[in-house]
Image (cartoon, rainbow, N blue to C red; front, side, top):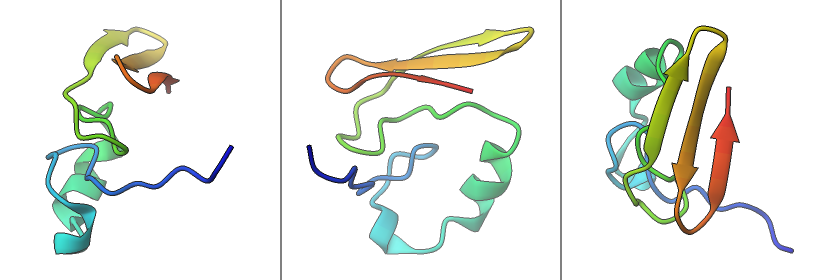
Length: 64
């Protein structure tokens, strides 16, 4: 398979190429992603005491 291309910001859902998204990067240090970075779909997010999981219907699950 190919390399994962992150075309979208995983916090605000805007195009990653529109800027550095410094505010999003700072927030992501404490929060799970809200959008799939590959397809821009809103993900189902569950925050647990020991971490989080985020599921994209197209690209599967991320954990942190």
